[in-house]
Image (cartoon, rainbow, N blue to C red; front, side, top):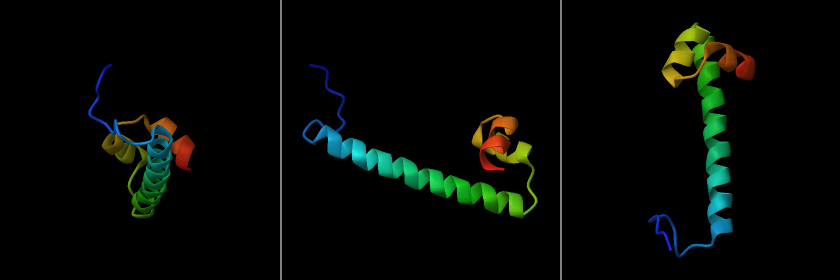
Length: 63
């Protein structure tokens, strides 16, 4: 059996629920951060570079 060091003793479904909530929370924070950056006049390109994503994809997702 391969041991990953990640929650071997925990319920896998409980871990997945927690990870899903963490992902949703991070997405809400990211959305708010992008909105704040845009409201302060930062370009899509600058925000995309900061997040290491393509500007076109970022703009499509958050515009």
